[in-house]
Amino acid sequence: MSKEVFLTNEEEQEIVAAISMAEKETSGEIRVHIEKTTSKVPYDRALEVFEELKMHQTDLKNGVLIYLAVDDKTFVICGDKGIHDIVGDDFWESTKNAMAGQFKNGNFKQGLIDGIVKAGNKLSTYFPYEAGDTNELSNEISKG
Image (cartoon, rainbow, N blue to C red; front, side, top):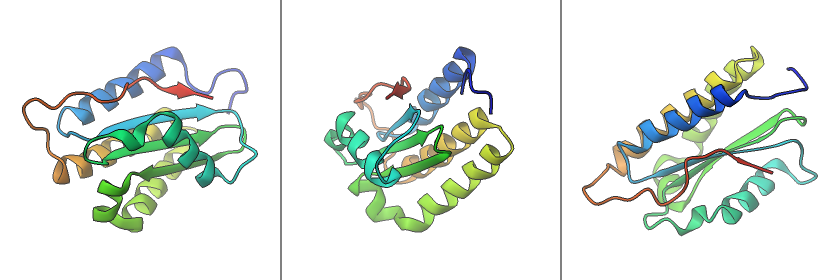
């Protein structure tokens, strides 16, 4: 992995576009948060970011966060209570494994997009888009 840039601006825009596409089919919300490192347990830090991004405030509790600590080479994908209670740990684990396969080959953009598409498909199954749904959270990548 190049030390200069984890994702180019173009790659970031492709990821934002993937989030927008996934969210067209669901009332769910997907966010990606990238930071260099964390001194906390990655899952605990992901939950903290989830709160900071106000992801717990979606009406149906159906936010999904993909959290990456780049220099630590670690990432977490987690969902709010509404989606987690339906899909359970197996879904998060299989999504994480699919993403990890891409990450191991240096395909960070594709790994993120694969995770977004998988989460979006699952969200659209249980939380389909309905007329009047609003985008409750930004699709932009947040950074720490």
